[in-house]
Length: 173
View 1 (cartoon, rainbow, N blue to C red):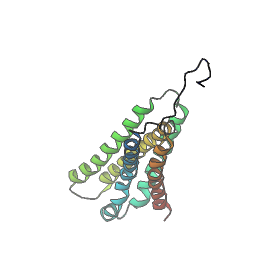
View 2 (view 1 turned 180 degrees about the vertical axis):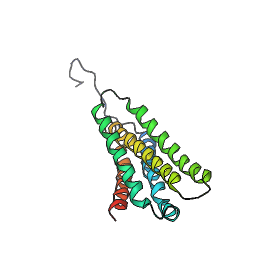
View 3 (view 1 turned 60 degrees about the horizontal axis):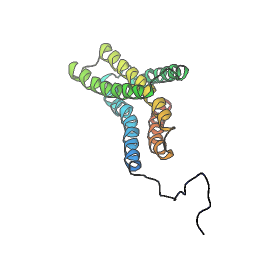
View 4 (view 1 turned 30 degrees about the vertical axis):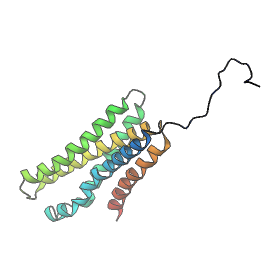
């Protein structure tokens, strides 16, 4: 006996094509590390800033400068989420992470490692730029990856959560 007549052709079950899935997981893992290493570089250098600016409490001030910018950037993008190009948001965020990291090095070289209120204000501005970058990336990447394979967001989120946890530990410890 042959196949029953009907409007649909016979379908054969095939294994799904997962050729690019492993590359996608690797890229999401690398982008998650980018979120972690971006602000983690600021947390790592805070010992140096404590030596450089002993009277200004940089471990607290840098974190308190960073947090409002993350929250306000995330709130603005949450309100305007339907009008925002998410991929451009991610690109701007990662570019801002890179430029902020580069600015921290340039600030130290330009001031020859001297302390003072002006270099400390520059450090606070750089921390605010890290906050804006993090606000761009965290929401944008979470939104983009939630529309894709679950494995992608599972590779990215632990790194993003770890960066937030380190920031909060720095604030309260």
